[in-house]
Length: 411
Ligand SMILES: [Mg+2]
Image (tube, rainbow, N blue to C red; front, top):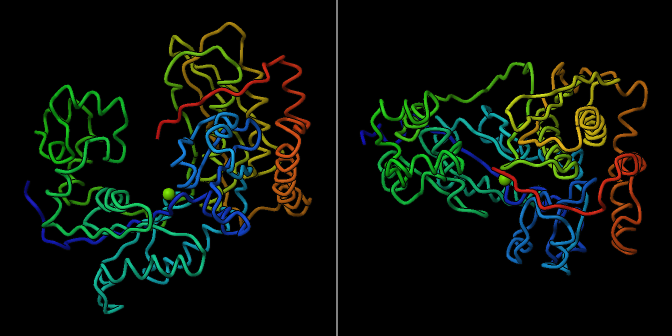
């Protein structure tokens, strides 16, 4: 593999460790020592867990009853994106002190342009990365992992390779060895299906991936594969988005990994998409005013519905309620579905919103407190003692079973 010089380009990637659970640990010091599970508020699926909960076997997508069996001593808390957004703002403002050029990638991850930053601080990349970790921990109470390398793809793989609370510095001369120790599935964007395809062609390690001949890569993974290959070789083809334009749309869609006609399974998938959509909007201070909800049928045909919201929002409760209404309009009992998704359009910047004039936003922030209270009551008196009114209405109308189902989430 032909390498560039050690630091032809220097990109950092900072990723919080178990972000939602860590945020909850910060504001609930009384939970110190207990595993933490964060739940999607409405269908009670674990959407994030602390390392302690993970060690007990709790996984993302697990229904709460199953998680309670594995980790009876754990604290179960409803997700609160307004709060996570505030913590993420704090994180990004710390990162901007080190380098003014950062790209907010998700609610708990950012890329940093580190070119010239060693001179500015008179420190090595190792010292800078360790400094960033310590500062974030001291000022927010959350640990992060940091990777620095030649491209964003390598920086992300570097931070991922040493979690939690680790630093990985990957100069050009060490890239080949680093890649030879990782499977192709460790490459961002290579999921289970793509990895399975690559294995068929004897491409097992990330280094083998970087050495695939261009013609074959084009046939296997198309243009995206060629771009990734360049990035793994240390040549930047995916530059940082330092001044992102307002996106036309923000979408969250996925196949369900199999066919299902079960309304509860499909709504669980949709709720998870809604949550990830909201976390993206909150992190980037964006609002949406229009949602397209769709289901993919067994035949790969799509049925969808468009919903205009009364006001621009990034509230999880509002968006989930609307998505559920969309689902009810689309769903036909007995029909088999293979996927679903949500596309948010009419995107605006949060700062320019006039929502507060009507007090809607205030109501949205009260909702978080309400969810926590609901959770506490349920915890004390048993599952589903209290359901939000809207959920109950939907449940009764559809006669849905009062069970939770496992939900597999593809990363
Ligand atoms: Mg993270």
